[in-house]
Amino acid sequence: MATLVAVRHGETMWNREQRVQGWAPVALTETGRRQADALAATVTDQYAVDRLISSDLRRTLETARPLGRAVDCEPTPDRRWRERDFGVLQGLSYGELFLGYPEFALTEVGYTAAEARPEGGESLIEQRDRIIDALTTLVDDMDSDETVVVVTHGGPLYLLLGWIKNLDIVATIMEQEQGNCAINEIEVDTESGRLAVQRENDTRHVDNDT
Image 1 (cartoon, rainbow, N blue to C red):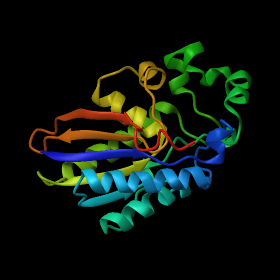
Image 2 (image 1 turned 120 degrees about the horizontal axis):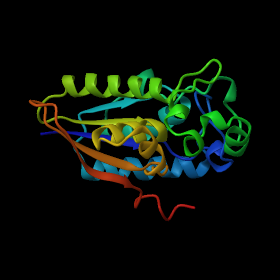
Image 3 (image 1 turned 135 degrees about the vertical axis):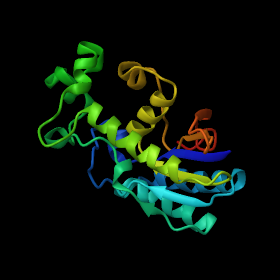
Image 4 (image 1 turned 180 degrees about the vertical axis):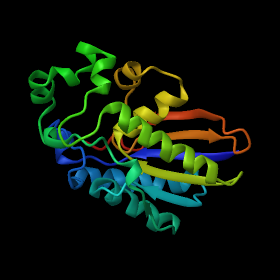
C-alpha cells in the first residue's frame, strides 16, 4: 500500500479575521510559522516521505518549505491543489459573504449553492472536479510503497475526504472540520485505486500553540 498524507497550511491573518482567502497571496502569521515547524517535525518523525507536493499559493508554500527541508525533498507546486477561486468575493468576511450573497450559503439553499459561481471565480462543484482530477492523477502515478505529502487548503481537504467517504456536497462542507496544519492520512491501493481514510484532522501537534 502507498500512503497519501494531505495537510492544511498554517494559520494566516485572514484565518483569524474569518475572511475569504481564495487565491489571495496571504502569508502565515507567526503562529502559522510555528505550526508549520511543528508539522514538519511530526511528519518527519512519523513518515518516510518520498515526495512533497504543494498548492502554489503563498500560505501553502510557506507551510511546505520547513517540511521540505526536514525531509530533504523540494516541494513541487501544483495549482490544482489551490483553494476555491472566489473571484470578486475574495477578501470579504464570512458574514459579509453569506449575508450579502445568500446564494452561496449551503445551509440556506443546499446543492444549488454548490453550483453558484462568483463573478471571476469558480463554483464549488468546479473546484471539486479540479481537486478530484489532481487526486486521481496523483494516485495513478504513485508507486506501491510510496509516501506522498500534499500541502493544501481546508476546502480541497473537505472535498477530497468527502469524495472518499461518499458524502454529498452539502455534508462534505458542513459536516467536516480541518484545523490549521491538520494531518490526514489516506491508504492508497495502487493496484485497485481504492482509497481509505486512516487519520483525519489530526491537530495534536499544534493544539497547544495559541
